[in-house]
Length: 351
Image (cartoon, rainbow, N blue to C red; front, top):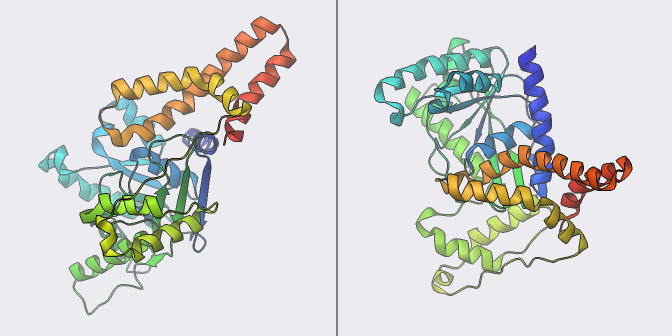
């Protein structure tokens, strides 16, 4: 009961924080997310911010497979378990630890048998490029194990997820989270094929499903293609339209253009009274967050996730201090309350 209250409260607070962090956070469901046993399989571009977006973008409360090294501390292990995270072991954790993954997969199969959902990043690690890397086989093994344990009558479905960031690290940018067509595990099982062939088929269908929901740029030509996209990009208000437009640009580019120079347009900051007010009032938290990231974050791919997490706690903390100073100066509760309310509003109104 306590765990459920903790999880629900954290999800609600994090959902509110995401609405302030992103200028636009749009969710697309190709079809309604199914009930019952579901495995969410997503691309992975932005460390743990990806997991936060998946959890807060749908009504299910999935159990997440998370790298095992973050569970070493007893307190961390307890908190992460309360957050419905399950350790999964990799080669870098030691060859002997890989045997524990059999227990992990069986536990996931049991969760699915109990009509729960789980989530996993199929690529196995994160990379901040608009490119879907080959998927690992773990999620497919879990799905087939769960079906085998239930005589292929469980009805496990795999839901591909595409997360498309406008920027991986910048504050007040846009993100689209898309849930694709569910893939029925038992309906796609072919008795004429071997177990390995069925596994590969399930992985390929899931990979195709994810790729349709994101901008996928060939990594062999990534730099010239990303410049080509930036120079030909047309900004759309609706992020689904934006995704479709960007995909068409990438799909239809002429090969000869790869050697042509392109000018990448930069978005100009438009200063207005609201922008100035927001900048001044958020300068203390913004300065501290930037200092921490610059001096403490070694992996650039964690910048966006750590920036969001720090902001969740530091921004409200500084708002309270600033409101206290406002009351000390004004000696007016009314002025202080109005000032406090204006702080998040100025962020939302910022253009």
